[in-house]
Image 1 (tube, helix red, strand yellow):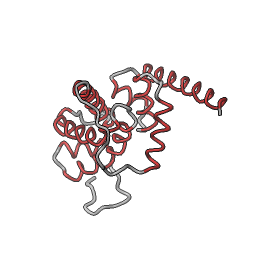
Image 2 (tube, helix red, strand yellow; image 1 turned 90 degrees about the vertical axis):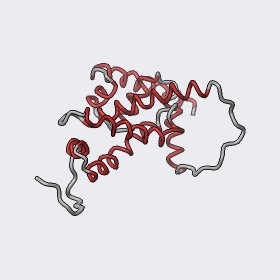
Image 3 (cartoon, rainbow, N blue to C red; image 1 turned 180 degrees about the vertical axis):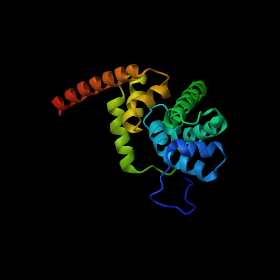
Image 4 (cartoon, one colour; image 1 turned 45 degrees about the vertical axis):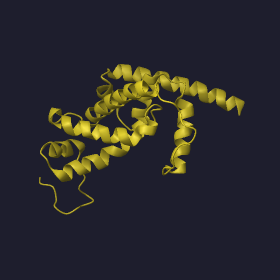
Length: 189
């Protein structure tokens, strides 16, 4: 069935259809795909401690990599895990690159003025940081993909090149540790 020509709120194509259109150089499909997936990617980068300050740059870099690799997407395959796998490797590459540079840089006393993100979002992110700080990176990554980005177990498994059982195990261990942290915090307060 052909897509309607005028914007129709009832018409909401799936990600697979949008990705297929993107592969076929459909500008509208590419724009819709980016609009639907970008908020999830931004949250994914935002809630990873080492990528927060570079979230927007990483989002852009991820889409550039997706664009260069779009021919490798297999029609009919799950789109989110494919994109999140690219995002994951983008973040890892960025981490390695910035670690090398930061080891040789000096810290400045005062940061230049720049527009601040919304206060509520920052407060929530800070609270989330405190809760996730003690989790190992693998557990934190799985938890962010599942709960912040809203991905399914299957999608996270594909994105992290893990089995579903491994994802479940990491998530369970993260939940257990968070439960313990919250229980201890509740007794103190």
